Image (tube, rainbow, N blue to C red; front, top):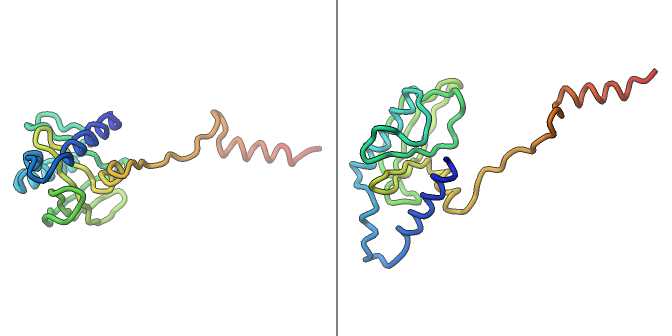
Amino acid sequence: MRNLNQLLAMILLACVGCGSSGSGQERYIPTQAVALATVETALKVWQRGEPGGEIKGTKPLIFVTDSHRRAGQRLESFEILGEVPGETPRCLLVKVKLANPDAEEKVRYAVIGIDPLWVYRHEDLEMILHWDHPMPGPKSAVGDTAETKSATSESTTRQP
């Protein structure tokens, strides 16, 4: 689902970026008030402990992509500080207070589209725009865990 969201966003961004400045691409840029309300909705959903992705029941539909959220980490509070420069015309800086583990950060969120609306953590949007992605860690063979490696090396070194 996440890859589909990213693909759709890339297509949307490509369409928005096409044509001359007078081509009407402004119609895909949410107003400042809509961008603020959208980010606020996305963050309130996170505060309630709900995951990112599609926020059901919103009209227009809102999708949230934030791959930097840690499993089990809660959003205690947030303050939208205002618009800042970014990869899109509607980019907002937000101060977030997190718990488990405790942290306080300033995070940029980009809002794209009209219907649906997409809220991207700015780092995620940059990865999409630069055709980048997080690299997964090395995969080990099934049953090849640290304990088995340790037990194997111990049994080979202890010979009668």
